[in-house]
Image 1 (cartoon, rainbow, N blue to C red):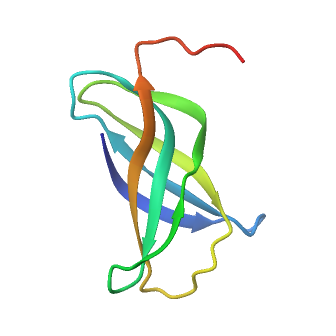
Image 2: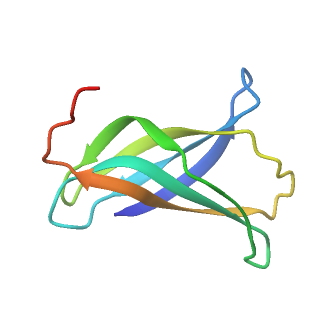
Length: 102
């Protein structure tokens, strides 16, 4: 699973940030995406913060397909434009398995 084309956006209604992007499944099996890891780095590559946003509406990325997503990150304290972010899938489960009702 590869996370591409991510961007951070802030809505006018809330002080929090949202992240959008695309998850590409280059493997042979479908995966249900449940959580991401977002790392924030300074200009030297030093780790500043890590967030693990849950995916409220989990989604399945089929083999050799891609899906767009949007998750809430909450408030961020960074005002420096040189801060970058890296994103990966933190938790994914078998996309062929049915979700268990809560």
